[in-house]
Amino acid sequence: MKPIIPFALLGALLAVGAADAAATDPVGYITHTVAPNGGSGSALTIVGPTLIQPTSFAGASTNNPSSSTTVNFSGGVPALNSTYYLEITSGPSEGWWTTVISSTATSVTTNDALPAGLAVGTAVEIRKHNTVLSFLGQNTPGLAAFGSPNPDEVQFLNPDQSLTSVIYATTAGGAPADGWYFTSDFSSADGKVIEPGTGVIIKNNSNSTLTFTSTGEVKTTDTEVDVFPGLTLLAQTAGAGASIDNTGFPTELIQFDGSNSDFDQLQFLAPSQALTSYAALAPGVAGPAATMGNLGTGLPAGADAFPEGTGAIIKRDPSKLASPITLQGSVVAP
Image: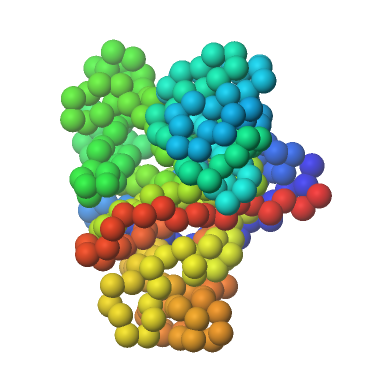
């Protein structure tokens, strides 16, 4: 079993996560690091489940599923529900995904209509969504639980820029069962989905560095992620991390053309909570090809790392519309 070589620790906006290793066969593990508060207040860290759940079904469509919510197969489809998602794994729509609604032995019904321009024989894979419980286990990070003087939180950033907060609680602290709960109504959050390619915030109120390990399979295909006006949380989807250029940002983000102010920013936050911001530089700004540039130094910085297991922020001008971007999959050596 060959290990995927990890990149060094790097900060990320509201966050720094980290990763030790992942295996290529294809199950692996990643170790994430949660920043301490530095002695006062709290620290925010973005982490994300770089690794994915095992494939439950893979096949090629026997119909043309373009603009349809039904994909047909020759057979072998297991019983599926909304805990699963279907992803296109080849062609120009590789990385597009949607949650599954239901299935028969020869078909899958999806929440969203598939893209136009597909064909008979479109390749797809179906797997379980990552969730709070599958990613964080029964409080694998060791967060301060409900009932503590300063309980820690896991936060989701919604498209409308509101936050949904989740907390860990135990029966000793008064919960009906050990598990994750929404702070809004204390309903179970174990099954809260972490969408492909998205990150979550861990709010650590202690002055201790926390680490935890997540497991899963290395994803070798691209991943489509929606970016919204304001802030969007991303997670690195490449099992060994990648440079910010090789993650795909130079051509996926709204570029800086040398004079516009409405470009996207890619932001990372160090454990100190200091931000480092980048922009996608259009061809001709810093060379013949698009590349990422550091907004602090004014220099090209496409080789800067986006490590596995960590997260980042896309900051989009409020005047711009939401749109999908594609994060590049892992390159796994034979």
